[in-house]
Image (cartoon, rainbow, N blue to C red; front, top):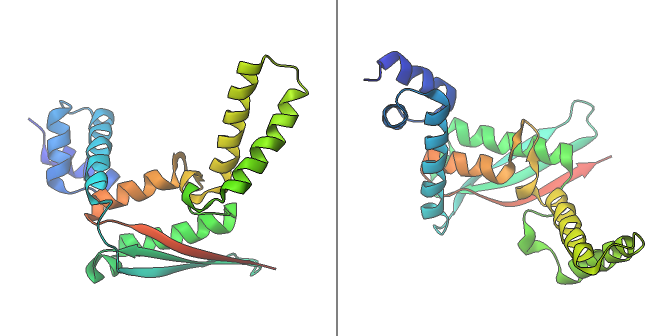
Length: 194
């Protein structure tokens, strides 16, 4: 049997509902780490179900660095006005703006990258790897890995989140989708720098 104090403690750590916390603790026999893993897994399933839903509401988050030389506006969309006014949602938009200020991504995700740019990068990295005289099959894998790493670093969704480098921006958004119960998408962002 799981105590109310354990449920409350897990809720304080995760922000999930009392029922989700209780269910996860019961399923994990009171093990907090396993309960969190269970909640993350179920959160991903919830997010997958909500992914295709329309997002016509939202909030424009902002961040201006303390030196006044870097600023970001980010349009974060959700399904309802209720969630757009939610403190967690607004905090997420601010955190994303701060992340963008720090990392300066070029794109939101891979879909925005021009195929010509990918092709050029691949050719550039292939020429680099060929100088190392690696066997052809190994060279191809090295180039693929380097191309992926490069575009992971310039796409917002695949970047390591600055406030928690154990997770990507996409994982942070999936967690909020599970918590708030609505689809959430970054529509666009603008970064200014002097």
